[in-house]
Length: 247
Image (cartoon, rainbow, N blue to C red; front, side, top):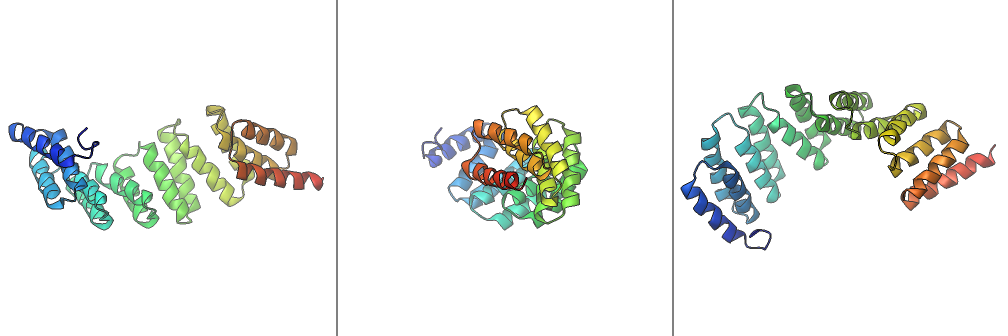
């Protein structure tokens, strides 16, 4: 609450006082590390990471992941990535380090940095559908469409309800110009989320490509009724009108 009210120095004092009495407290020390980082006090944040490592032991990735987050608050992204990689090294079986590194690099738009780290995270734990989706996205950005599709399919095997992997497979199909495959993915999305406007837009595109113009019109009308964005709606309406004029 103190941080939210713009009083981080008081928050740090409260946490420091508590930790003097309870030096083994992990949640409070993690929070103090972030509070110091939010004030640009990276030396103090580093000291808290080292104290956290003494509490959690030398094989815990948590202190170095926390320090990575702190470095991100100071916009030191290369240094943050180094800490995430260090976390991966000190805990060679724990997916936390490479997973954090991969997800953060993907968020920064650094697909080449994200891809090998996500592969390593999934080698350690293949059950993470979110990581599979992030890997698919990174590979798609690198132009590796076969690898992207394989990642999305693995994500669905890990969790059939992870619908973002259907979105990924639909995107790969669109990039390949495979309207039938795209339609299958959009159908799966609409079945799971009937009010997903973008999935109806996707169905409309695929149905137009397949020459099923009446079905495409119905999908487009449904997308409009659900509040789909005006620009893609207008684009597809013009495309559908052009196709009808040719028949």
